[in-house]
Picture 1 (cartoon, rainbow, N blue to C red):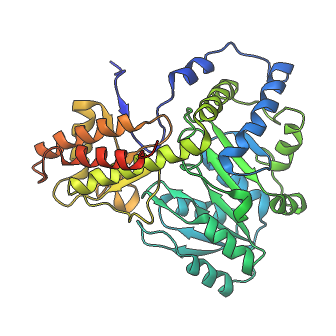
Picture 2: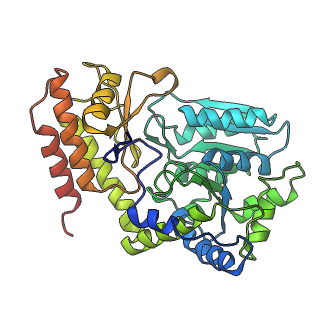
Picture 3: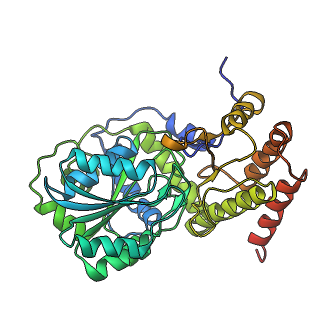
Length: 386
C-alpha cells in the first residue's frame, strides 16, 4: 500500500505544494490555441527574477540533463576546447556530455565536498586560452557544495572571451543569482527541485553574448535547438508539444514565489541551511562541506560512528522520512538532506527531531535535544528584527 505520509527530503524530486497539484489537474487545452499562447506569454517574464536576468528564459519539455545538453550543443563545435569544473557527480555529467559531443575537455578536478577556487579557474584559462566555455555547477547536488559562480564569471570576463555556463538545477528558486550583473552567459535548471514541480520541465536562461555564439553556431541540432525555442516564445509558443499540466503548475509556483517575495524565498533557504547545519554540529554529526562552501538547498553529513545507510533505512521505514544517500564513490559514506522548494523552518524542526531519535537508537553520542535547540537558536538569530 502506498504511504501518503512520507516526508520527502531528498535533493530532488521535492514535495509539490497542494495548490500546485490542484493547478496541474486543470482540464487539458490545445497547445496551439490562444489559451496556451496567453499562458506562455504570461510565464516568460515571470521566470526572469528566478534567474536574475532581463533576458528570456526558455522552457524545454525534458529533464534538467536535457538543458545541460542543450547548453553544450548550442554553443560548441567538435574539437573546441572547454573547461569543466568537476567537484561531484553532476560536474562529471557536464564533462561527459562535453566529451560525447567531441569537445576537447580540460577538467578542473576538485575534491568532493570542496568548492572550486576562482584562482583555479583563472589558472586553467591562462593555460588553455583558446577555451570556448567554462562549464560549472552552481549547487553540486551530490555533495552540497555551492560554487562561487558569480565571482568566477566576473574573473572569466576580465581575462577571456569564454562563455560561462552554469548548471543551476538544484539552486534556481532556492539561491539568489545575479546572472546579468556577474556576466554569467547561460544558466540551466529543472522543475523538480527548488521550483516545486514534478520532473519534466527544463529552463535555459541565455545572455545576449551567448545568443551571438548560438546564432553563429553551425552545429546541427533539432529538439534542443535553442534558436527555435526563442523564435517560438516570441509568439507564445514552443516548437514542440509542451508539458501543459506542468505549465499550469509553473504558473502557480511563480504566484507562490511572487506572493512570498523572491528575496524572502532566497532568505528562507539560507535560514533552513543555517538551522540544519547548526543542528548537525550540536549533534556531533560531521558536515561534509564547510560553512563557506555550503549549498543553501542541500546538506551532506559524513557519519563516523554509525552507518549512513542504516540511518536512512530506519528514517524511511519507521518515520517515512526519505533522505538521499551518497553517489559514486561516496555511496554508503554520506547521507544528504534536501531543504529546498516547498519546505519551511517547521519542517527542519521536524526532521531534526526525528534524527535525534534515530541517532539515540544507533548509539551515537550527543546531548538529547541539542539539535532541536541549536536549530531553534539559528532560527531566532536568522529572524531577529523581523
